[in-house]
Image (cartoon, rainbow, N blue to C red; front, side, top):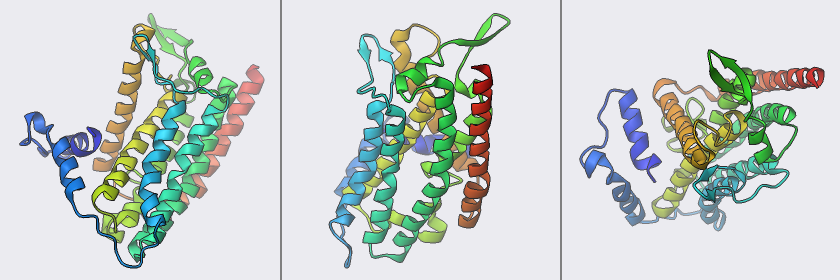
Length: 313
């Protein structure tokens, strides 16, 4: 709720030397409930020729898939409370499986809307996810090789040791420090997976109006909007667990949740910087970067990681 109506506008305005919302409540914070009431109060218009119930189900699947992903994310402790619902042995695979369900929602919305712009947005979403989900998972597998487990808590636990001490400062063995090349690859593929600039091709307003969500309004549009931002934070959570030590940070373990929130908000800040600073690539460029660049580099990283770990072991 804070990220969409308020933080997105304020952060983007700061990057582009504008003011953004500042009239509705202190610092413009009351724009959050105001926007919620405004969007939910709008009429839900169902165009002729839509394929129901697919048109109705699509906006529900998108936020649901992201919320399912958070079920296996270890978010750390806040006092006596441990924010980790489940820790299955294959949790790392599950979180990517849950996140990938979002593609089904975008395809359903685009196809069921009976609108050529929506259909183009859905098809672009499929092409983009295919091109970048494989490098994303292959790069993530290099972390699994380092950690030796698919269990989320095990991956976080493997990053708690000290990598090196410089001038009395201990640098933790976060995989972003151990393998910065993989971190950059994962970050780039993650941006494409969640559809952030410069990879927001499925909803490019200058080319396809609003893409897969063109025909949606009222509560259905809110669900798409919510799903989009929950996926950003899920992407930040996966990045934090995979490369940034999860909930680890200075201070006692009991404030780990605070560090986890700082990390995912840091990722959100990065996505908004990218939105303000980086131009959108063309669809052909996006696909070429994914298949000819990211895929090759991710497999090269995986092989190199396997060789290094094999030699060390």
